[in-house]
Length: 192
Image 1 (cartoon, one colour):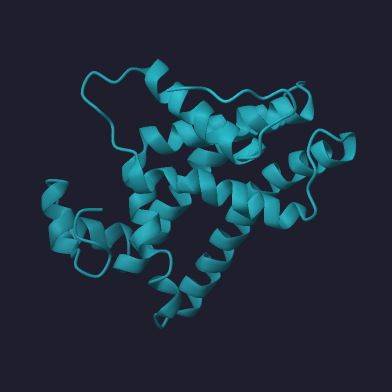
Image 2: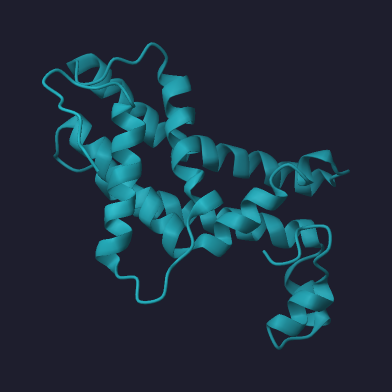
């Protein structure tokens, strides 16, 4: 997170972990393999956090909001995971990968697609019931998740910040992304 994918070395990582380079190489053959493990852990955390909301008995729009809030809160709590993934996600695609790494990358891509499908399925339900007007479920899904992920560009925890503060931010972001900028009927301009 601090040095970026290219600048970070296994020596740096070992030093930070109070470990040895050999112990890291015992578990991971290369820095790319270590990155893949971080990426996988990040996606699994997101899936395990959001999936219960996706499968809840709530109405589709309420489920979508709960999923998006859970995603955003997780991102805010695990900002370092997200920064590592964001920094390196394009880097590894341009590198020469071993057959095993290409296979691992395909598995990660499928894992990410499965996570996106959780959102797509609920967005499609919202469209069918008429709670959202969505011309393209795929574009809506990628836009929503991309918007949620963009919180990592500007959010930084503050001293004395509480869970309720993060929840306020997450709800504001989710409402903005789902309901947009267009005023609703009966909307009155709020004076600041």
